[in-house]
Length: 242
Image 1: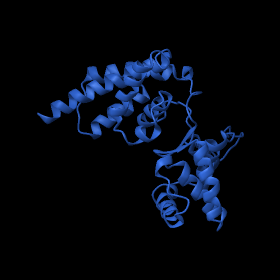
Image 2: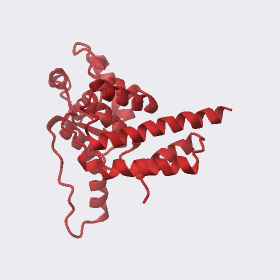
Image 3: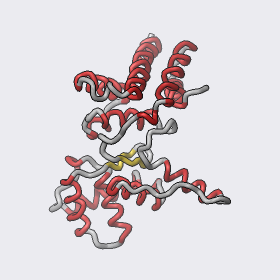
């Protein structure tokens, strides 16, 4: 049986021009299967809600950000679409990077940039679903009726990618990001870290925290996977430089 998590990791190494050995691939597959088989054990109750538009995080807002959104929305009363863009921009931007409410021009520039670089790649349905989940925890019913056509199937699949349910189809980046949020690593730090650095941050946080994150069997399996991946990557990168 092939681990999707291991497959993604190995493919990433190949894209980097690295050459994992058969033993490396077998090890990663074994560790990846242990993570995937235990995914239903992993509790995300301590995490803030997060949705994904690709690799952009749409996160549950703090109280301060909710206030910012409420007041910013009053500055832009053009259309419903504009209000949605403002809200998505706010939810996708770290609190400390949001412009002052007194600087409408800078807010508008930020919204337009976020729209052009992120939102235009997605449907209105995906964007609204991500916002609604981050704000309210609502998820649409993705169960398809008998005889659903291809368009309905495609829409259901696109919406399923928005949520933070830990499935084997998540990219490695998304899986480790959720681990980081569970370990209470600030989202702002997690987002801008390199993947290998974030893996180490999660394990250091776990060890420093004592037992909370390490008590969970799925988290321990994920930790073993990411630590092994980090060691292999370091070795392969060193070999490539010679």
